[in-house]
Image 1: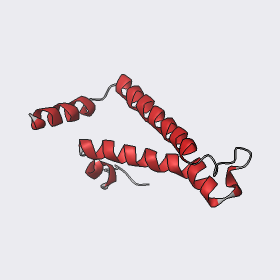
Image 2: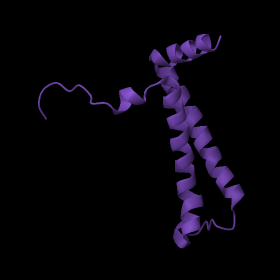
Image 3: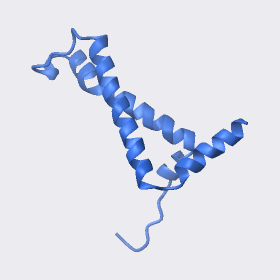
Length: 97
């Protein structure tokens, strides 16, 4: 049963369609913005809306936290599809640069 679900997941994302790209972009954007909201709720004292760069904690919670969560989400998505090898191996480029 797990292999059926795993195969269906990979097959669904393996076939390229424009609406799937928009879907994953929309889901990613919602989760990225939710991470920023959670960051603001976790530590409102560290985030100064007038100047995010006032303190290292403000930079982390105001800017970096959402980026880290987004990177983790994308890494989990790519790992679930087994695309890490395809993304980071030498790409075939014809001709000279």
